Length: 361
Ligand SMILES: Cc1cc2nc3c(=O)[nH]c(=O)nc-3n(C[C@H](O)[C@H](O)[C@H](O)COP(=O)(O)O)c2cc1C
Image 1: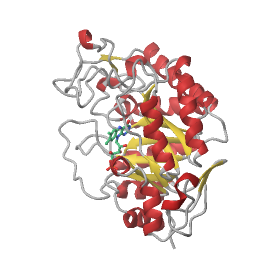
Image 2: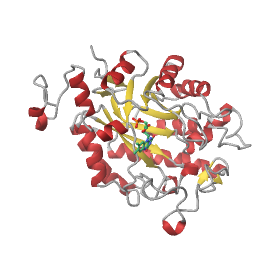
Image 3: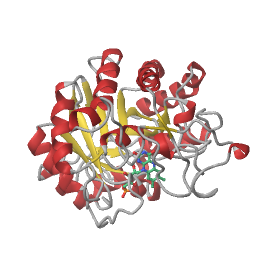
Image 4: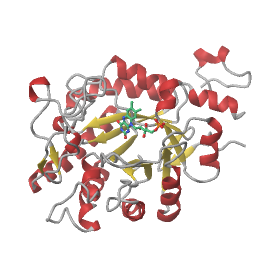
């Protein structure tokens, strides 16, 4: 019997199944606004049957964008079009979630198909690239300014305001992006955090900003709604952030009201050697789930229905997040259900293409 298509309840939110759309930057916004591309891109994956559709990393402040074309939620004007996307996703029986992000020292860089490294101000980049410490990610990346204490407070407030706007837009899940070498991860990792104050040094100090953001967001985010955090469970570099610290962090986050840890890795060290292969990050989700007693999501080279099924049914993770396979096939969940012999509802409009046994959504 398949468990991939078992519903999952977190707080008062029910997810129809455990195939989630992993956040994917589309680099297709002007001034942070969502547009028809986002509606069709995210909407297609809801039509395809995913239990949760997460937006790409959505910038909580303009200077926190990765590229000039990032999606954003730093002003109220952003809400209107986002709410249209949310409505469509919910009409398909899926759940809309938003990943909130600040790019830290990896801000003001080219989108992948336009170049590499820092975007000069003349080409739409910005000078106020912020990080825990003035340490650049790589030679061709911006040299960041170390955040002042006031600046850190502004970052926390930006996450809170963004969470409030996400709620107004109708999103039912927030995922805080604390992975892939962006600002919150930069504070966690000794590779990027060389501060001497109470935000640097010890584990307690390096985790302080993320804990503060979680607490502040939880105060404005509805009690009934799930809060996810994506972490990089390891930097894959000796002396960097690692799985032991991730387990400890997850224990703390759980006590602060985080419901689900989305377990990715890497992104904070240009020189890291990562043993990429099918399901290579699954053991991190399994370890954190077991040792911190919190729900986890597994992500990374999950491409086959039987593989996804095994991860969930063997208790390695509570859900799987798929990125590239869902670009190749937005209908992966419908296909997976068919392959696994599981009945799931097809959109009424597509019923004649579905298996005989399907019931309309
Ligand atoms: C086009 C693209 C954009 C991505 N953008 C984000 C993002 O905005 N936030 C994030 O946390 N991860 C992002 N990722 C990473 C994916 O969410 C995922 O963790 C990674 O691709 C591994 O999963 P996969 O093997 O299923 O693709 C992106 C990946 C791709 C391919």
